[in-house]
Structures are given as C-alpha cells and as structure tokens.
Length: 434
Ligand SMILES: NC(=O)c1ccc[n+]([C@@H]2O[C@H](COP(=O)([O-])OP(=O)(O)OC[C@H]3O[C@@H](n4cnc5c(N)ncnc54)[C@H](O)[C@@H]3O)[C@@H](O)[C@H]2O)c1
Image (cartoon, rainbow, N blue to C red; front, side, top):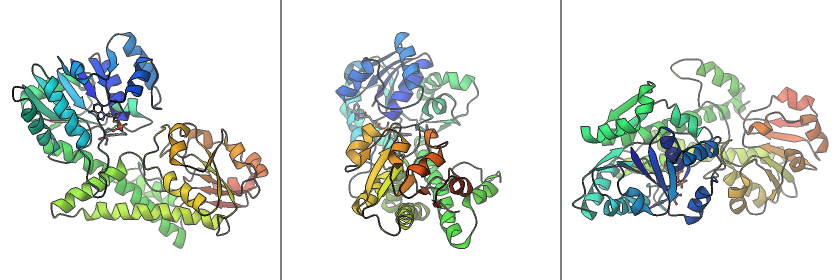
C-alpha cells in the first residue's frame, strides 16, 4: 500500500513510522518546514521511546520519507491519512476543525485515482461526512471514499500501543474502502488483534466515549482521594481494593494532581460541547471537567499548607513538569496550573524534568531549570513530586533531606511511603488521599 500521512506530530509520525514498519510505502507530510528538515536529517522532533531507531530502520529500507509537498505525496496514494491537530476552539470548547478541513481540501486537489481519505485525528461525530463533502466539492471528479480510524496510542508507549493495540477501529461505508483499510492493517489482523469495523459515526463516537470514560475513571479516584483526606483511609489501598474487581479493573486508578495532556482536556470539552449543541448535556463529562479543575486547585492548597500557608520567599523544587513520564509533551500539564500559582505567591521555583525543558521553557517563565533533583532541592523549603519519571522513583532521600533547608515533600503521585520519607529525615510528607 502507498500511504500519505498528513500531519507529522505525535500521532502522524508514530503512525507513519509504524505503517512503514508493516511494509507499506509511507510519505509523512507536514507544513512545518523545520520539523520536516529535522526528520530528513534523521532526527525525531519529539521525545518518544524507540521512535528514532524504528524511523531510521524504515528510512534505510526506503519505505519512509518526509516532505512539505502535500500534492506530490498524495498523488498515487491508496490511502491518505489526516492526522492534524484538533485543538479546542477558542471560546466555546468545540474541536477546531480548521486544520482537518484545510487538509481535506488540499488532498482533494491532489488526488488521482481511487483514494481512501482516512481521518485519524479525533473529530466530532459527523466530521467524516463533512470531509466527504469538502473533497467532493473541491474536486467533483475525484474517485474516493472516506474512513474514520481514530487513534488510541498513549504518548510514552506509543509504538507498542500502535503495534500491539487493544483494538483498531475502522469506520467505513462500503466494501471497497473496507478492503483498503484491511490491507493496511493486515499485519495486525494476522496476529489476531481485534479490528472493529463500524459505520462512520460509531467510529467517531468510540474515540470520544473512550477518552471521556478514562477521564471519568481518573477523576473518580481523585475525588475518593479527597474524601480519604477528610475521613481517613489510604486511596492507594482503596484503588487496589476496587481495582481487583474485574468489572472495575486496576488501570487509571492512580490518584494524582488531575488529568492533563494533549487529549483528555480537549476531548472532554469537545464532547460536552457536542452535547450542548444537541440539547443533550453530557452531565457526567461536564462534572468530570469541573471536578478535575478543582483537583488541580486542591493540589496548590496542599503545597501551600506544606509551606506554612505561604509561598512568599520560599524556594520550591518541582520534580517533573510534563503531563506524564516518557514524553516531552507539556500540553495542558497540571504543572502549567500549579507552577504559576507558586510563582504568583512569591516562591522561587526550581524545576527538573528529563525531557520537559525544550517545551517547558516558554510555558513556565520565571522558573530556574536545573539538571538533577539534588541540585533542585539544595536549600529548598519544599520538594514537590509532580510527574512520576522513573528517575524520581529511587531518589536518595537521606541525601536530599540533608541538602534541603526544610525537608518537606509533597508527593502528588504517591510514589513514596510516608514511613520511608520520614525515616530518611524529612519532617513532612504529604501525599494524595492518604
Ligand atoms: N497526542 C496523542 O497522544 C493523541 C492520541 C490519540 C489521538 N490524537 C489525536 O490526533 C490528532 C493529532 O494530534 P497530535 O498530538 O499528533 O498533534 P500535533 O499538534 O503534535 O501534530 C499535528 C501536526 O499537523 C501539522 N499540520 C496541520 N495542518 C497541516 C496541513 N494542512 N498539512 C500538513 N500538516 C499539517 C502540524 O504542523 C503538526 O505538526 C488530534 O486530533 C489528536 O486529538 C492524539
């Protein structure tokens, strides 16, 4: 199969690289010239474990290339994937479809021969039909079908998720498009990974429903954590106790500083908006969004309390600022709410993150970036563990406590046990829901 991937970001790049590893010929397209130049030079513009090696292998095999020339990439392609961003539209929470529709129109002008136009971006129900209209209007001669193929990969484990998915969802309207999609995903089909073929609308809804459900699960345990703090109980034990129930499952039950990242905040907002527009409010999702905002605020109060009720004049070491470990993605990370509150309250903030600095520097003005957690903690009044990078899981706590001005730990990921922290010389340990 010849594939053109439009949009070479976190999803487009990983998908393009993995499709080429399946044996397809893939051209990845992006408007950002600097990004394409880097990729042509063999460098990966994002941090994603394993991506660079897999990319180099497939470039060397002649199956994978990068360009800014959309028209040339689309010519002769069996399938063109749209993997551009669908950020929250300013003001109303709706998914901004400008990039998707612009890409669809450009694809339409460039297509020759039968092509399947596949939307991989996360888009509201009805978008694939709009893509169909846009393509047909721009190029009435075009011979094409549309397909919806939402992506479920997780940043930080993206290659494994793509190569060994829980399921692949394909929304199509006829056999011809279904056959092209089946051929593209053949290597997964042969290995018995579930491939679910649905209509266009169901495929689009599956993606929003999945993300809203996961956001709900996290938010639920975060709320239980808040109650544990009032009435007693350790949310880690509670999560284990409920997670062993097969109907509930143990994933996404880690209490923490609230969900963030490039998907959950914007996708819950978009789903809520769709509900409002159709006079069917998504009450659970709307509540989840509100509770999640409150969780982040509660974290700020937790840190303030640990700092004797004032940030003014305090030095705070923040360990981890990306929205989760193993990514450099800072979009909607809890750190973007928490760190400015510390600085706004008069604290001096030192930040350490294994991959977050290049994205984070512009987003967190006024912080001091340091290279290792011990340097961050030196003479500090408090240490806040915000992202659970492996590097922060086995700290020498005795050394850290000895170097701090007042050894206090706010562990927003519940990595450490209170006993261990206290025995290491910390005077205060504050976790979440325990
Ligand atoms: N990031 C994730 O973990 C994830 C997971 C599942 C689904 N998604 C969805 O996938 C989509 C893409 O997300 P992302 O995180 O990869 O976004 P991203 O912002 O990292 O990448 C989008 C890329 O598209 C490029 N682009 C925009 N318009 C273009 C055009 N007309 N032609 C060529 N390139 C164009 C941009 O320059 C950018 O590089 C979104 O809808 C998102 O919701 C993301």
